[in-house]
Length: 326
Image 1 (cartoon, helix red, strand yellow):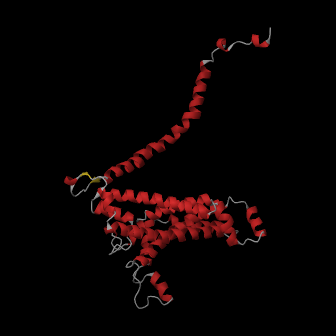
Image 2 (tube, helix red, strand yellow):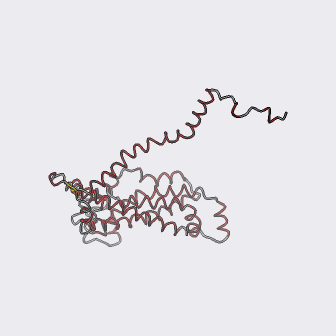
Image 3 (cartoon, helix red, strand yellow):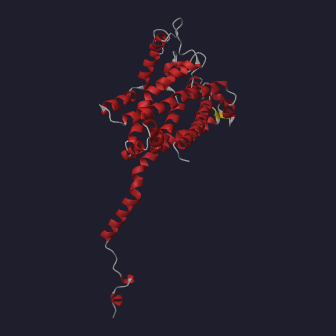
């Protein structure tokens, strides 16, 4: 008789004990269901505080909802979105938003990249310099904006004092809030001061992962520090660069605190006497909570959301191409 004939057939095999079945079920639950249990709270909270407000805001944008005229509440369809096309205040706020966004985002990321490249070298007191560039990010936005408001004051402001050293504005001090270009520069300076250090540390952490052999080989081939930065460092930290570009785009197009506190009358949310630095976020706040037109404010919010998606996507693709990802 062969050995195969002596083996019991599967049909007559003894059933596993109950304790083994319980362990098997517990093991399957632990490996397959436990990860979903751990991440479920995030999705529950997101559905309550994230997804529901987005959906509800979309419904509100399709209605005529004015808090001061409740009797006129009703379905408006796309009338609120159509109104945006001919609203001069909306296009002015959009123009201001993009102007401040360009003046803040481009210098901010370039300076952060250069500072990170300098901090990536052997310096005395590296910890001191790395902590120092992060201090502006730790400063509350309201506090730093109030300080900059005094800095850019027309009378006795330090910005005008620096300009007077080079012979500008001695007869008549520059009113930084009066014109578009001057107010844009002032607000962009506030944004750059706060976020350059934060982005520099992100770049620095990515640069730390690049092997030193790559730079040594490039130096042997005759590549200088500037060429190494753009030919080696930037392509190798491209995911972090794309991340900062997208993050800066979202934050720059939602700019609210800096222009709000820079205004001499922040409660009005007008962005200056002639709306010269009013951003989209300010206009949404004004229309929704000053004019009490929630339906139109919701439509502006969705328009801003779509604009951010488009601009962030374009910036991400351009950054990948600049970094060498063809």
